[in-house]
Image 1: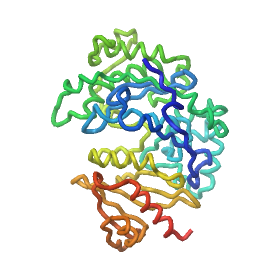
Image 2: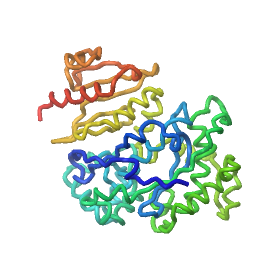
Image 3: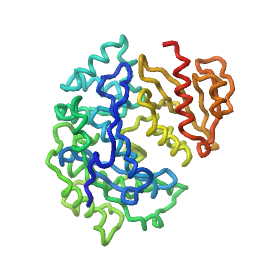
Image 4: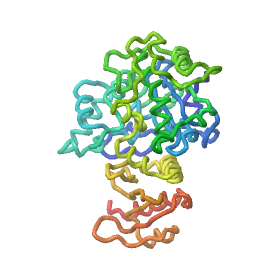
Length: 395
């Protein structure tokens, strides 16, 4: 199995920090040009492991696109893991209960996080807090704190070289073996019936420190790529006899008590999406068309260094400017017909100059609104709308 080093896949970019967050939450991992699109070896559903200096710290799954599970690229996940799991991404947010525990129990990065929270009269209003579920957890913060001397600020030149991945890609032939039950035949079915059982077995066997199922203090730090690869191959029958995971595989592999039952509400909920996403992001992405999902992915990749993207429980996507204080520049919400409705601080005239059929907004902070077809729009025009909105701010 190939071991992919993050420095071969991504370029580390420094952004302007978000006001109210530590200055070192300022890194993005951008996919290198040669790995953009859907590279054959990293396309479609599979199970993966993430390593720091060759030691496993996370097990995850990727199930392609919602309506096209054997498409997409696992790099969509890995680009987040490379910065989110070490607390260095500007989009990192926490649930309030998780944040309180981090400040109370951890050292290293926790001191800077606590200082930022203390600047707010109401801690719940800190930009580090997400009311409806954060993208970062106590387990991930604990991992970062344990390795802060090598993951914290000052280590940017070596960070990506220390992080690596392995990927067990499901055979392309399985695309024809998917079942459609009550209309569920896309990535949700693949996650629930093929990927989630294997992911659960691997987590229970290896207790990676960053997985939410791992109780702090019980993690195993000595697991390397070879051991992970061996169990992945065993779960799926090896390259020569690939098969779906059966309910008895956990016991067959010597993991007494390992259950691969996916009927519980917890398993179904976890099978729905990205572990690094907030609840609002999962809801928003679930409503996107294939073209809409591609547009949002490109917007995320090409977001200017002075801006960040966030999601609310509405659900909607919001483009923010980071300094001198965090301000909303543009919102995007989905429609049943696949189109996307946008509202922005940019003027009607500027939006029209960029090719959008904008109309004046009344009764709110936004100045213009328009609807776009995600298949027809160029993401650079949306970024330009954000830039125009910045010019309208009274900073």
